Image (cartoon, rainbow, N blue to C red):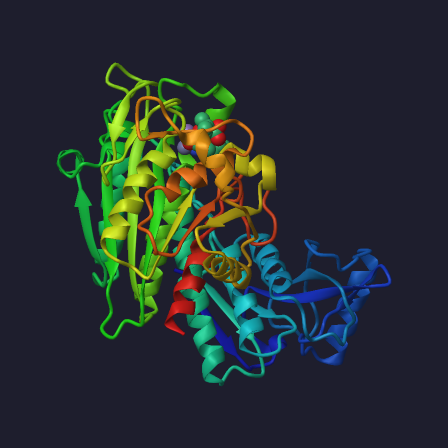
Length: 500
Ligand code: BES
Ligand code: MN
Ligand code: ZN
């Protein structure tokens, strides 16, 4: 885990491997942003370098210079904040997060990093700390014995004159916990699907819990228990694979809890489509089809680590969707946990089947609210693109509450409707429910399907993260290639909202 500290020492004195400073874009040219605290000679030197390099100070611009006179750190990294002046002290938190992240992400062989960006109070310090810690993430991969790992960032120091204030210190702690949680979610998603299948996912959760002194209660239902328990959705999806399904329940139940939140995650460790096999290109990123479950697991551990006074129960609906002689068929009818029967129409619409069972189980615990998070539909990406999640709910106020949590976390999202007009598309001639509707509005009919498994009166929201969970393109801001960890920030902020 990367450590995160705050300090009010002058930036130029710190013996870090790299010192990160910000630039702003003023009349198309870069200027050193506020908060650097450099002596005049050093600041003049940096300004001359910026001019010589024709820096612009735009967002995502990262430049490294070495040997700045009067600065102890060997390297100075300049990261752009975009439009502003050298006197601007207040910046959007997501702008700070991304700039800090892009700078730290650019570093090679730097263990100790200090950042002196413009901040005003605990929340902006938190943004810099989070961005930096998230930008430090590297996926180790699966490598042979001859591979040598580069030195990663191990210690982050955020410089601020407020370093002695309690909320500022707490922000640093929280940033470290959040980044560690997102790193765990990213690692799970990046792990190849021959290494991460339902049982090994469950094992990973148990191991992480043990390593963090077992604050969380972990229960695992195996395929026999699932069959017995009437979880027909998850059993059906998992029956084609040699790696049987699991339902993992994680409970953080602190004394004097101020409320209870249930989190349900789609955990398809590989989605081949089943008998309705996906084309080759569509299968390429489908190891990431458990990103919802990864976000849920990481959030429950983070809530426990921070000691948040809210009961949080995570449900990981784990299965591998594979074609085989034992695989589910289109036209099969299965009985879900709550007794509802579903006619399978397309085995590639497997996510809603495992989630339906998970939402039923979550409801049995009578939580104050349920949030499910899932890489559920390609239609989400058609509607909102690769970076913006769709949020649907049975209650507008609760949907707005989840959206607000996403905004605080810097995770882009947008509200989507659940039109009652579309519900008739889920009528079936042979079962209680058909398991998909027409192509158009596929994200919404998937949401309507899930709503069928929510207990009346329980606020419920559904977050479709098909796009934002996995970055197919190049890295940006604090977001690496591959798994993004999307959802951990939203869910943790929501739990904190319940904590008050
Ligand atoms: N896991 C996919 C959705 C997905 C697609 C996630 C692309 C991330 C990127 C899901 O299980 C799926 O296959 N959905 C189908 C549903 C359809 C058959 C109703 C889809 O969206 O095409
Ligand atoms: Mn699918
Ligand atoms: Zn899927």
